[in-house]
Structures are given as C-alpha cells and as structure tokens.
Length: 259
Image (cartoon, rainbow, N blue to C red; front, side, top):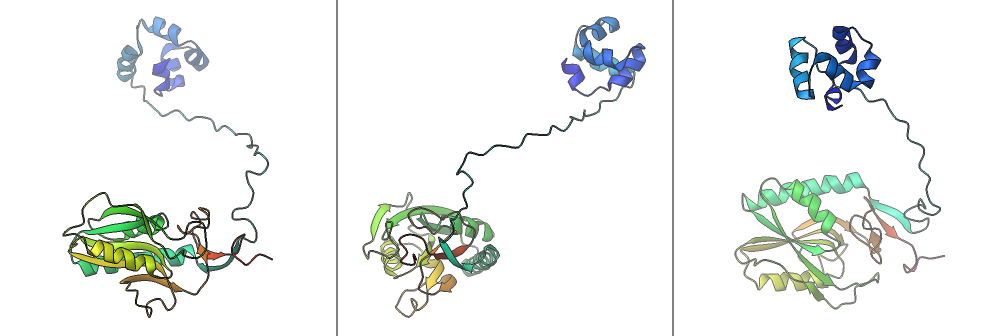
C-alpha cells in the first residue's frame, strides 16, 4: 500500500493496534479496516493524532552480479603502440586553460567575448575556456578542412560550416586547437576580419615551435610544441583519440613511426 511506502514505522502502528508488525506490513487492507479508515490519506491524519512519526525506510543493499563483458569490448584504448611520449598531462592543460581565461577576461575589460570555435578539434578546449572566463561569454562555430585523415595539412582551406550569426561589432576570439603551418589561422583571421568585428584576436591551445616567426599572429598561446603529430584533448587521427584527457604523440598506423 502507498501509505506504508511513506515510511510510517510498522512497529509503532502495530503497537497502537496490538498486532504484529508483520501483519501491518503484509496486510495493509486489514489495517485500514481495523482502523475503520478507507484510504491512506485518512491514515495520515490518524498517524498524526497518535504521534506516529514518518521515517524514511532504508532499502536493503542489493549485491549486483558481476557484469559479463563481451570479448573485445574492454580492449585497451588507446592500443599499445598508438601513443608515444605524453607531451601534456591533463593537469597541465587545465592549469593553462584557467590562466588563458583570466587573461582574456582582463584584456576585454568587461566586454562580452564571442568565441569562434573551429570544429572539431577545438571543442574540448573551447568548452573548458568558456568556463574559465568570468562573466558573460558567447560562442559560435565554424568547420574547415585542411587535414582530412592525414597527419600533415594539405595546404588547401575549405569552409565546411560557416557561422550562424553576424560578428559585426563583436569582440571575437578565434579558437583553434593547433597552429601548424599557420595557413588555416591566417586565412580565417583575414576572412573574419573582413566581416567588421569590433576586435579580433586569435587563441590556440598549441602552436608549433617557430610558427610565430613565420608571421602567424596568435594572441593567446597555450603551449608551444615541437614538430610531431599529436592527439588527445580534441585533436585526432582519423577521428580517433579526441577524448583522451592528455596530449601525446601519435605513433600508430599512418604516422610513419610503425616498426
């Protein structure tokens, strides 16, 4: 019965009726008849008059049987040999993201930044960066292609998805996961700059060593890394490894590092 599920103590009700607690638990309808009540609602008032307290019943702990896993489901991920040196740990990444968020907020001095996030690799970085910026933040997305499933840029930038909203008069932060050749960043800064934002700045989690000297202007840099193809924290190889919380060197098939 529903009224018993509300937590009225079986022993206390039984004491008032001079019957066993087992009877109260097992024969709820009989209890109502004995009290000359017709519903659980009436029992509520009866319990209040007799000062029977309502307690939360404790459910017994149920030991669940060990789950059986199908063969192959729990294979190691990433597989042995696919990730080499770990360049950046999860803790190092999160610490730097918080620092970037504070720096951006300070530079904009109360203005609302619009984070233009380049899909797909920048999504994790942008999500954490948004949370690290105190105050209001807005976000929009673009998708470009210059890698495909390769480990080197093709040198051709293709707009796959454009912005949903106008950026005229907005304070834009262009968010990239990595500046490699600098071609994509330069192209996007020129493209977005032509749309008359109030200001535009570039932010990249990673920049290849030496790219600043090559004329690529990045206002906010997470880390500089050497020339190696890295995956994790949004960066992928053939759409895999984005969900790794760290950044490491890809050494699997297609990397040129196979033995």
